[in-house]
Length: 414
Image 1 (cartoon, rainbow, N blue to C red):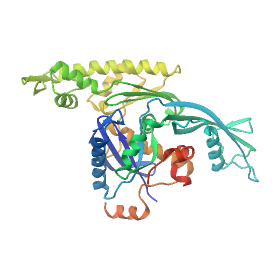
Image 2 (cartoon, rainbow, N blue to C red; image 1 turned 90 degrees about the vertical axis):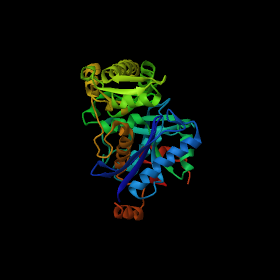
Image 3 (cartoon, one colour; image 1 turned 120 degrees about the vertical axis):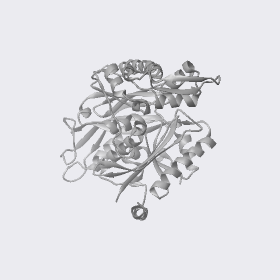
Image 4 (cartoon, rainbow, N blue to C red; image 1 turned 135 degrees about the horizontal axis):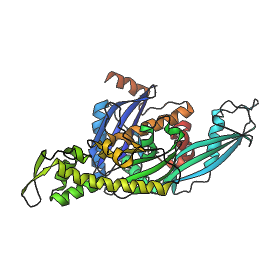
């Protein structure tokens, strides 16, 4: 069975949809599309009619590319008021040989969160931190070990249900169901993680359009996250104000003229626009870059401060992503402002080589890691559809299967 997964990221500026196929633990991009956000603010639906229009558009684009209707998605949801908590669960090993199986691990993880998630919250992720045999021996992998009792310690991640309920209702109106949810800190980490990062404490930062998210990852496990209500749109506002530019021109100047290293900015590279008074105004690469870098430095200061508020542990790495990181020489900016702690990362998958897609691609990788835990497979397309794909080149109630879904996915036990 081919593992084909579609991921949807609903942002304030763009709605992004990626369809990827997992082959040999790598994501091959089948479709990667975007549509300007309408009726959406900070990831929330504020005007359903407008939101439906842009959602239909992005699905139609992807469906034209893959040649099949896309009716199931993995959904990125806002991480406002995200909470992480540590818990334990134990099971008695009942088989005759006392050999621990995958099923025993699943039951222990389920018990670790049973009745510990309130009705207004949704379980996003549950990851084990250690396993204990017979209340004595701590091991990293209990499968096939022999014991009478297995105890698991986990970190569970929960968010308020109102973060995503309206999004799911909106998708239902275009006959799209959500088979699981994810949050950007987990997705971005899985997109850029290295084996070395799994042994250390680090930070993941996503500079979005309307806010930035700062999260702490401890040995591969999300432990805390905070959203700051300022991000790359503030650069456009600065350009609008200083150069008396329209919103459209400010966006164009940011994306096509600004660079992230003032030493690389060219004073003789110019663009002429009509300002809001109707006058011609010539703006140099140097001038617009100076404005951009000034705001980026403010954001870097906020990022450092938030990391210090979220953890007192020593940070070994910082992942910084988001569309703004594609500015020319952004790697220079990271080196100048974060020294050796942060390094420049870019989405490498062919067909999605832009950091605005880091969350979408990372979601697919994260979900695949959940499948591997159970040695399971999943595809948004059935076998007949997969054959058709090769030739061509119901309402979701997440809370019903929350305990099972957040460990391995809703569909496994249905």
